[in-house]
Image 1 (cartoon, helix red, strand yellow):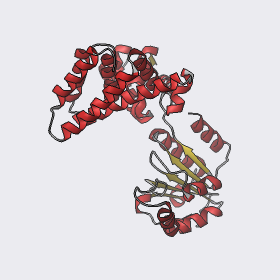
Image 2 (cartoon, one colour; image 1 turned 180 degrees about the vertical axis):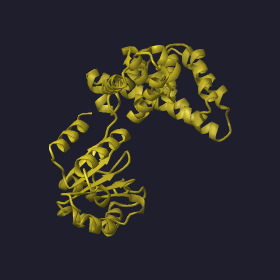
Image 3 (cartoon, helix red, strand yellow; image 1 turned 135 degrees about the vertical axis):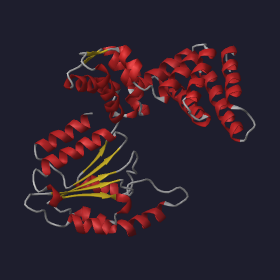
Image 4 (cartoon, helix red, strand yellow; image 1 turned 120 degrees about the vertical axis):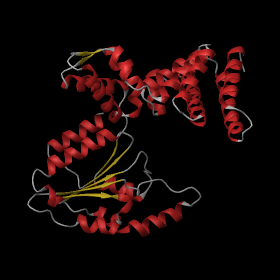
Length: 350
């Protein structure tokens, strides 16, 4: 979370750029950053100098006119544009020239503004997970201010955050409990961990410590963690336990198509990790190269080591064929998956 700490430190020092772009999957830290902007820039007269807009409903030219207004009784005004769609990638099927032309026509006033943004306005765009860094608008924001990728924290950072949050609430959490909480929920971001820690704090009541058993009783195990377990049992030679895990997912109303997609993703990750390791990539760099959290990369490493890449490739092909057959009504999900798990176990190599 160094990017977040760096942003907080710059705001504390009073170093504020005229324009920012927040993007990436970490929503909790985005909201914390926006709160800090309000605290630093608008200690008073906030009602007169704060505008929060919906990018889906805002015209760029209207935004520029608003940004050029002078603040009232303070040094800066703050404009936050949420759900901002202008930084997304190009539409499929359209040429780059078509898209650039469209962008230039619709957003030309905003591009002109970003060449010389008003020093008395701080403009913050909040986009979704992905942006297109090739777009003129992205490059203009980067040149005039800062574009910040709000990445999900690594598992070590998330564990430290959980421990700190519990400490602030007057609780101590066992190391194993913090690891289990992050292992089951960390890949959904800090907002999800915030809600999970809130439940644990309430559950603990007057008790001063949160245990591993508390986490197991109260915290929600997410779907991806169940998928990890299913693949673990599969490559570990336990098809019965693997199938039991799939049945548990079905009991939780997860759709077969989603389960297949997540299984295929995990097998693909194991293959990608195996390929990197075979190329001589150090283990510590695998997560960075694939853009994964540390615990996800470690899971994939363990699964790759327990199986053979040809078997994993076979499983990936079977899952793809199964997906097509199920959608066409040619196979039933559970019997088809059970048959595949048994074949995977019986085969020595593919």
